[in-house]
Length: 448
Image (tube, rainbow, N blue to C red):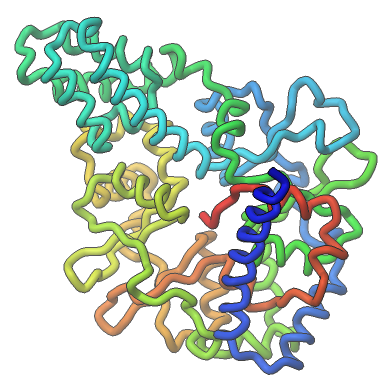
């Protein structure tokens, strides 16, 4: 068993090294310059990093329902939050007080996974309860399994789906045509179901953390350097790093990839920043992935299929494209699933909702026409500084590199940007990451 565990850790470590080694090779910075950058961040204390807006880290109790958690994330305009164990909220040990971090990645996984389970169970065992034939039940199941029905959006568990479909399908005796009718009725009652129907409304954040722990809780101490934070956010694929103080129960700061890039933008004019930021991105090896590895979605594809692509590829956003040349027309982010969970009244038919219609509806409702009209892009000859400016000013997590015809040829993420500034000194992981090391290597976090 120990050998298997060691082999697993070795494979995780190798995956971190593969990405970071590739970055170091492609960015082609002089060794002396890279050492200067790394030393600069090693001398910057974590305590000097700006506090989160409002000065207080938003935390969510583990017994909070999923619906309420989504509301907290959305209203606070954040992608993730630390989760407190209600039974240990007064503990002085962070290992007991915090269970993990909840984010949209975990919520999307839970929604899609439960949709598939519900559809399979519905086809097999709820046909009789719903009063529909096996063929009609199979059609309903196919809708959900193909992510073309509101069942997939809601992520309802078996009991809730059964009750909702039974009510809708049994109301009309024209069984042959009632599968889509029942699905549409579920869509109309979506908000009522998510807030009032069991067991959906009682599903808690704790249950998601147990099954979909993509964001491990790996803190650094107040005496750590920003180099530690930047390595965790780049090489080691974390999206946020809590800052704790030994002997204190609360989190002192919550440093995200986005916050670091915002901070980098403020460094314009400093020698160490200007010596790298004035380079065209192509000279730094950006984008790091070739065009054929960029996962995209056509505007006429179903929006739920887009979220499935994110899940299957472990990514947090997709360019919306059209035509065989993949001309970019917009961007879909994993956090956009909150509109399906919080504003279902905007969408008349979940099962027929295309990506383009979904984004257009959001743009109209939020007065943000830029969502579908002006996606954030750059050219291969764009400077690194301009890319950082765009990511920081627009508060987005990725920028797409486009060719002469606005065709997508690459993507640059926050992780890529941070990776360009640092390298890992020999034995740094073992010497400075301390208690976080073992937990990090055994986590299942992916790069979303």
